[in-house]
Structures are given as structure tokens and as C-alpha cells.
Image (cartoon, rainbow, N blue to C red; front, side, top):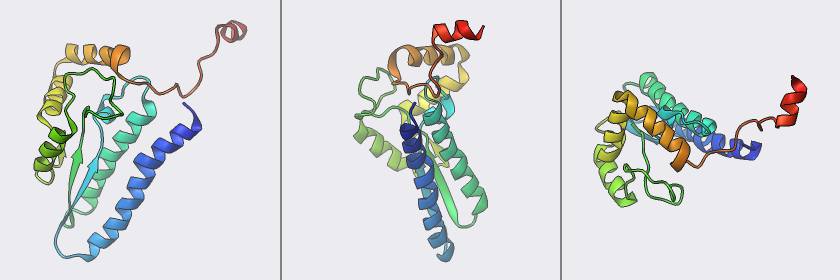
Length: 171
């Protein structure tokens, strides 16, 4: 994966969210009562899929960041982390998974959960996927293999694999 793509992912998922949240925390601290902070992440932050290291790590950061905020400001903020699965969009075109939901259906469902739960997938299909993924070891193995082979648009490797000739020279 190129440096530009790494920088883009880090800037979008980590830097912008961190600094924007800092701006709002400063405002929240001055207010009476509690405020709600919602961060939208991805199930990829917990699945840690091969070929998606930077993306998965950036989503894991978002969940940890929100959990820390909740602990740092327990009397000022409530938090909801949306651990989103596949939602039909340009990004997921070509994905072939049973847990895909239409964007309108997801938005309607997620809005009912925001503020009620600290952690939510936002949609029943994503919740079922989460429960099965984490509680059925054979299913987890099969799903990971399925993602590797069929569905996930992989990032380019962080480091280009050595060519066969270079490997022979090193031996």
C-alpha cells in the first residue's frame, strides 16, 4: 500500500476524528448536563482481516478512543460506538455477504439504537453476524476464508513481497 493511501486512511479515521472530538469536548465541558458522542466505525476493527491492516487498525483505534473518552468524562458524555457491518454503497459494491443491508434500512435501525447502547452494530443483521462470528469458531474460520477469497477488496501489502530471484540471492 502506498504512503498516500496510508496517510489518507490515518487522516480520515484517526486525525480528523481525534481533533474534531477535541473541539467538541471543549464545548461539552462548558455545558450543563451530559452530551452524546457517536463515532461510526467498522466491524473490520475487530475482525482484523488479512490484507486490510491499516483499515482494520484505524477502526480499532476509533473504538478504543471512544471507550477512553467515556472513562475520562463519565459525568459529561455518553458514548455510542457504531460497529458497522456491510452497508450497500459504492465502497461495498461487489461484496457478496448475507449481512449486507440497504443504507436506508441501516440508518433507520441505527438511529433507534444511538444513545441507548454504548456499543451497537446498528442493525439486526450486523448483530447476528457479530454474535455468530465471535461465538462459533468454525464459522469464524470459514468467514475469514470467505472474505479472503471472495469479498474483501484488499489493500496493497504494506511491503512489496520479495521476488523469487531476490529470495534465492538472499539464501
